Image (cartoon, one colour):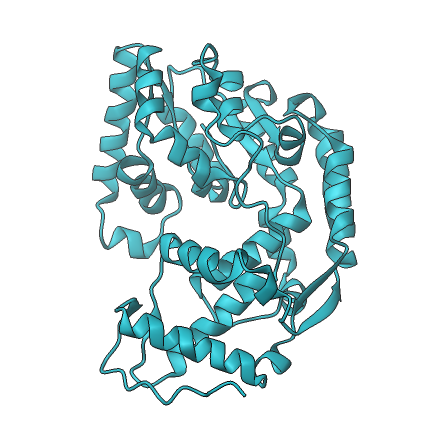
Length: 360
């Protein structure tokens, strides 16, 4: 049972587990991956997380019975199963106990990934800019809005303690995100071979992204430009929006921002200090190793501390200068027109693009 949490490479691991080559390899070793979207998420959203919006679209009793049938069938066939969802990290103790009862008869191993706190916060902030859940908020202001409730819920010490209380310390494995990276071991390889103990004879098949991990970027600038650009598009005639979804976001970012260092060098920036959350990160890391050192695979305290120290001082977008800079106003408008002309904007009424500001 892979519980994430969020922004620790979970989506990447799931894409590997869903791939044809891994599915066939696991089948040869009597193991199957329970589809996240078809079975796991409907159950989590309606039953364990009790989301009202989900219960309007799904029958809680029905989706629970369907998932239980998957478990029962696997037991009858004596088949191993893999479950993976970052949403599991939001389940409370009562929900964890409910899941344990559903998995009665299985020898369960809980697997989670521990990622250094500072870079995880940066990644969470970048995702806020990607999905535009709110208007743009600079990272320096974002970290000041994080309250005790957030820190408590997102604290990995609390997360892993909660699962250990229900399933037992001996049945919980924690993967050190940056420690495994330093050892050149991918998350999918560790999960499939080292933990599930299958497909170890074919490491070249499992290692989809050798020496690479997902969500490792700590550069605040590209997602911040994207977020402001999304606000700009929304403000234009026609009430268009940038299309949501990771595919559009990653495509736009790769093509226009991340792979264009010359462009990024032109951005107006502001220096920021991350000491307040780096100190918090070191405290959390100390607690993790004090309480769970024997449960952590590829534990590497030095690597994690070096990661956090490296970004103690960072830079983010100077939004005031950006929004008054003729070059960047022109850049945003040109991309707006281009996306509109190629029908890559969503929810438009009747767009009436304004005249492009010409660069002097």
